[in-house]
Image 1: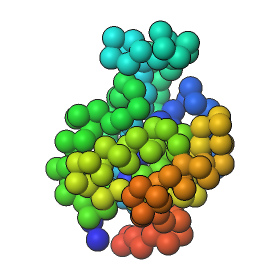
Image 2 (image 1 turned 45 degrees about the horizontal axis):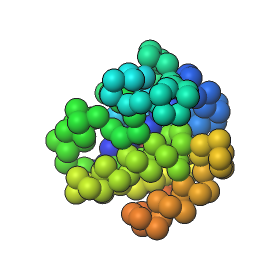
Image 3 (image 1 turned 120 degrees about the vertical axis):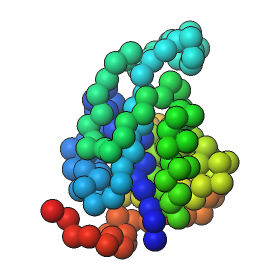
Length: 160
């Protein structure tokens, strides 16, 4: 099965737990990996004017990814979507921060593009409303059906 890992918002400003960074990095060494990071641009997404807060204009990805794409808002950028489309994966494994917002938004974008998103349930953290991610996982199952635990992944190569 041809698969690619999509990591959402695992960047310093969101203070991800170390277990999440380590778990995703273990997978990123075994699978092709794309990371999305949020950088604020009020002209593209009105976080500050509508929500009173905003992510930084510049931040760094904490994952060892083959490609990193900047996004402004909740969904993957058109460039990231094109990269994922060109990979022609049988499924896109999704993990990261804010299961109930940005991760879920990535799932909708992938689904709408005809791609096959699968959430890695043990490598996701929810928003401040539900840090466990349970609400986002439940929404993901309802909308897309496909979830998996990282130990269930069948990877062709052994980790280094």
